[in-house]
Length: 282
Image (cartoon, rainbow, N blue to C red; front, side, top):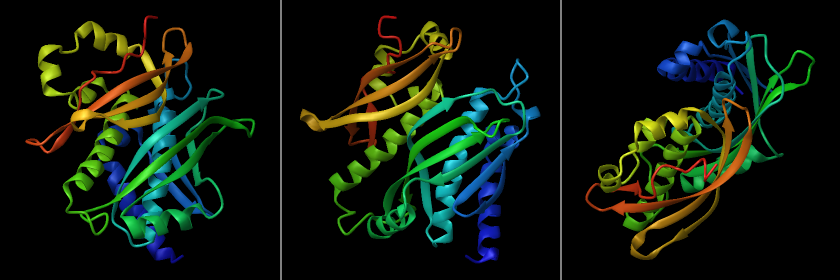
């Protein structure tokens, strides 16, 4: 691997990170790539909580971004221009962190990159599983992240049938579901509302009370369990969501149903089942 290509690719990715206000505030820096492992750092002073250790949200961000940066870097080094998203993830907090944040990300499984890059070249999109860890003071992991990332070629057709409307619809649905899922994972319910069916938003807008309840929860995982086509061109998706009560730290898992409707005028998909019910009677 050419050192100049690696250095310039890392610098380009750092520029992308610096353009994100939240990431810039966390002072996240790419710390290098070697032996298949990408390293990211962030100072504790910019990510400290009321207890004097690393804020859980910052740990989640640093670990997730290390995976995103690793996939983006490997695509750049292979000469591909792509958009990279986190498709689903799981995060375990194992011990408090009283030092600067350090995330070490790598792919899972031997030959994972060869398969991922070959699929991307053939189809214009591909998925790969990434694990990332935050080292603890005792040499053991203080936090562990596992997730799947998906990459789409920028401005390129995903195959010979790219002009077929149904193919475009499927691609748009996947992209929309990934983006919507990211808003749920990060607890950005105001952003999630923008994906709801306009008719639903008008007839039953989320109340301030409901939004305040969401603020009391933290999403620890978000995974698709199943997906099926319905009559009328709609798609139903069942999603498993890990939820932590920020007041009691109690953790549980809920399964919610999303329904996606294609809007031919807007040429986009809307989520018509409303925001996820993360309480389900509790």
